[in-house]
View 1 (cartoon, rainbow, N blue to C red):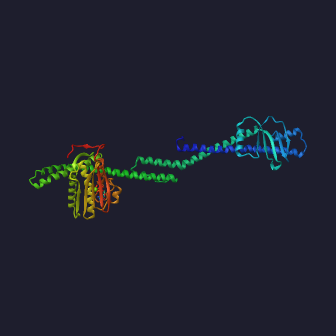
View 2 (cartoon, rainbow, N blue to C red; view 1 turned 120 degrees about the vertical axis):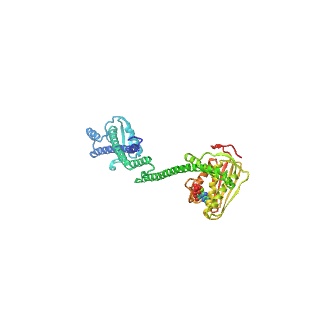
View 3 (cartoon, rainbow, N blue to C red; view 1 turned 180 degrees about the vertical axis):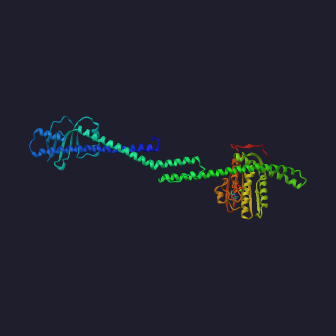
Length: 476
Ligand SMILES: Nc1ncnc2c1ncn2[C@@H]1O[C@H](COP(=O)(O)OP(=O)(O)OP(=O)(O)O)[C@@H](O)[C@H]1O
Ligand SMILES: [Mg+2]
């Protein structure tokens, strides 16, 4: 039982507190003992002097000194009827050192006198004044010495101290046993659970079940159980995501290989006899190489984060046209899809600096979300893309007239796998878009979303200092 354990400290503190309490009792007890002692002296002296008063004659000196020594005093003065009467007397061995009037002594004075008496080893003569018992006079005064008084006070104090010590040790032991049963055993149980849980956090069986009867401990166990539930399910989800990630990586890998073959065939179409095929060929090649790129990026994502943006200067309206053309095509080919109008409001000469491929993905994701939201309403709608610039940044606004973001998508905005509620969606589009914009040092924000539609705004800073970028030869 060392002092840095709970039980050790508990025992030590209990011992100290009980002893402290006992010492506080000891002082008044010794003071009272002294008062009792002196009062009994007064009483005995009174009885001795009454013997003399009864005979009404002067006593033989032998008898007088016997009476005095029986009472333990040198002389007695009993005052009756205002006359001071010296009743019994014998020689006093020394000068009177102090006079104590017991009739009106406050507690603190008698406690102080008791302490002085204890600390003074000399045998001194003292005078004690008190009231005679049964009002047999007005006052009684004796002289006596302090030797016996002091010896008895020390004896009494030591006895009391020994009892206190025994009492405090017993109390400390009892409290310690109680603390062991009530606190330490349940705390040890929680610690054992925590250790077992730390060894196998995925195992839901090692989650603690709150059983402690002590309310505070039970609360702690309940909080621990809640935390363990969260950690275990987060770990399970993480494991599932890791498996999903591996599957995606495998699919991307094989898809890239298939697309690379398709790309080779598409290249050959450029030399076709048919002019219509020749015209379509570059678009097909472009689409396929974009798909290959995406597969490669997905593979890279499996290993690390998105690659750092590879910057180039390019015309924004051309990029937006590519996005809207692809989405318009997708809208037309969908069965019984409502009419969707694509409006763009971008200054013709607006050139921005960003990773063209990544920005294409960001805009595609946002425009596609808008299109899918409008299609889900089965009513015609509009998607509008506007852009502009100021001294600090370029900004692009993408708005639609769809039904607005569902609550879940708002709660988990930009969080992967969490906010998706669209059938067939993975809930990754917005998270990827916001990640890519953040990698540019910019931000994607939701401007508004209500029953009239949704609008996002994308901010790209002009000053890209401090961001890890791969700068490529500027293409105007
Ligand atoms: N413009 C929008 N209007 C209405 N709801 C939207 C809009 N954009 C996103 N949402 C909602 O937010 C959810 C999350 O969108 P997000 O693009 O992240 O995932 P997704 O579209 O479900 O799947 P995917 O990963 O294929 O894009 C969607 O399921 C959809 O419910
Ligand atoms: Mg989406």
